[in-house]
Image 1: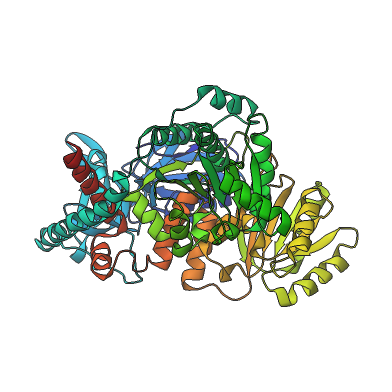
Image 2: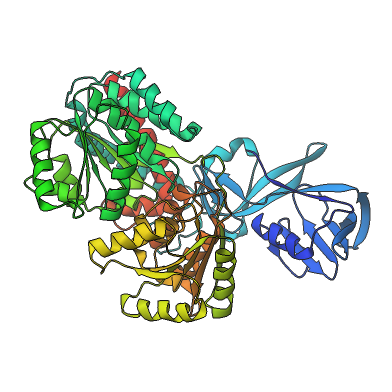
Length: 614
């Protein structure tokens, strides 16, 4: 497990505020007086840190904004022990199965049950010292784990708002509970596999991958494929070469290249004689896909059409006829694709963009168009049930976590709404030649808010865009914003699935506490699409409490590029998973935590699949 380290060196310039921020980020707790590992204190120009890197705490002695001395000391007599020129402080939090665990978070040990992660600790071991992970159980008992057995730990993630009881070390209760649930998981895995086995029994002709077409598309791609994109394309091609329908979920942040992966898959299915339908949740996104994908496929003999409210009725009728006759190879559209008059000559692949925006009935209707259709679902932040089913191994899963070359993390601030600060943020963006999204999600007052800022910024071009505008007006507003005819766009959540505008790099969200975490993450993905540093400001007016605070806190912490998968997990944890798989399994998930439950289900599914094929 690679551990991040904070390096302190004599004469290095840094402020005490920076050190405090870094230590908080690294999972250290600020206290008045040091007692345990994982704590730090600040007094005047002295920062004292008790980390697992040293058996004794260290003092970083500052003179102004420069490190003057570094030395270790004994707490009880408060006596200096040793001077250092440089020292490394390791991160106190850990990552378990891609999930970040901070001291104080609940964890589950497969053999011992639910405890609290208390951080890294150094203990005497043989003739020297060794680092362990400290887990606290009921009655104040501790378990100290060496790194080599860390795979037995998972983060505890509940599926309701109930806080679980800590397990007792040495008790047989946990083992009995786990064994009972494992039996229940076996029954569930068999049930789920039966449902999916019916699909697996469906036979369709194997597709042959045309490497000449693939090379042509690769050479006309403006960017270099990221390793995760290449892996996802290879996984999908492998699915297409099998003689049974694909059902794959592709998870990746907004702007991480999911569409390019979908284009490669679509081209191969069309080359093999099949038609492709791409379903988008909004007319704006449908139009964006139509423009982008038509451009990507222009060198190939592929007929592309769009079917949405942007298309005139007469033209829609021609497209419907073209789908029936097979003249049209690829259609991109909204819910219009689900209407009863739609029939395909030979639908081979259905691509559902932003899958979480569609209801079960919509998806089942589409899947029912043809029983042997391949399905590729795209999502930045999948809903709990989708995420769960994919993690369990029932459905194929590809994840794009590698950011495109040149992309930078978005600087994120959570703060109380302050007009003076907002003016400052907007001025900064306008002065560097950029554009601003101002999200005010109340259609009744959005015009008044825009008018207020027209008075403040009389030289700036300000416009309004929301879902109650006509399709034509909204399309015009978004086109004007994309062509830089608008400096500040006052908008509703309509921008959630909007245009790719590299010059829009400041986002201000009013009353951010009223939104869901995944939605805010998706909206933040509207900016930071170019090489310039992007800034997002999530503001609130009333004091933050409970889940609203947790949501915004998670957003502030997860600024790394490619955090959509983590956000989906956090959203699941904060909201609770709901009744994902019925009451009985819901209770089982609660006992083990979602992650361990999913892990065990995944292992069971794999075992059963091997037995069935072996």
